Image (cartoon, rainbow, N blue to C red; front, side, top):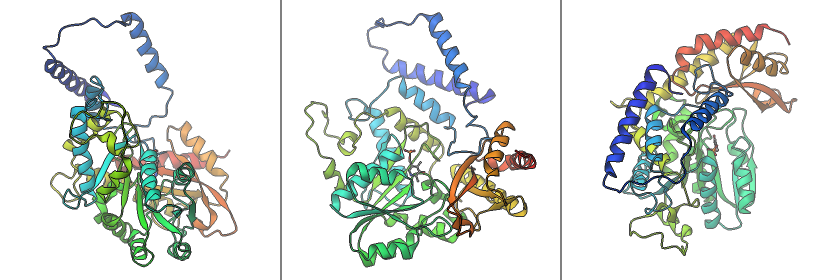
Length: 452
Ligand SMILES: *Cc1c(COP(=O)(O)O)cnc(C)c1O
């Protein structure tokens, strides 16, 4: 949410933008809209919307440390609202001219972040989110290796299993080590069966932020020959701060350049409103699988229409405009570059996670995972009695601190006899979390002192 002083700035910029946009269409004859909402009624309805929307957790606030929620940047919000007043559709140039161009530019920036430039070639576009982006990547993977299995780790997002079932592709789950990373021995056992077409490596698992050992998976590809898809819906942007990560994560984000397809979600860490995922393919020739015969005379220009390389038809052009604007303001450059504000925001969240992990380790009431967090997600159990997790979760919420819960295999905590343990989880993805850690800790600590 945009608040106080920022709000006036936002509204001023939006008004200026809308006026300028209107001037661009000033020579059109005036017309009266056929449906006009009575002003007083519309005002009352918006007031009711505002009232009802207060029934939400404060996702935008640093005291919300629960799920993967990060507020869109004010520039993204203004650009989205401005573009939405035209409401372009990035299916085809006919429906979204400027916004298609901005999408191509914004996606090229994302590809560049992963080390892909126009020289080697790549194909990519925005999607409604990570689910659909992964669906497209696995659809292509299935076309290229019909009948072969797709593997993902048991900590991969559940969407992969579901997507392969939608696509009718056989799926296999690979065991994880105690840090939540794909176990290489388990993977090799599967590969020896000779029926694996694609391996999905997750760089930043949803539960733990664990990073699969991609460099080693690439080495296995040399021996067993399979396709590699990287699901970096959550973690993709951490490539920009790989110099500040652990050796495993740094190597994985370095190696990402050599995979076949990548998914990243600008609506997770990229400061975008929902409705913004991205899929990238290393080999632009996969575009042939998208070929279709449109009965509509819709594709009326010779330039690339995004609908020709996307499974989704209508898509919000405004999402592309918002992403483009955000990347103009906060370029996707690595840590140490002169314009690295975005990367520095990621490191602040990561430092918050390391600090929280340190406090948990020093406090006998809590038992964090044996290994340190790889990104900015922290998971811990309540020492002794893990049924306490729910109580602490509820008490924190009553104290205005919003955490999340997650179930993990007991072996992640060295407890092989317990199938699953109820854990507390924090996603520290806002740069402000670093400053707020003392207050977050104060509330967590107070909650842990109460008994159910
Ligand atoms: C969030 C997430 C997804 C699903 O993406 P949506 O944008 O929610 O559809 C897939 N994989 C990973 C690793 C994720 O974190």
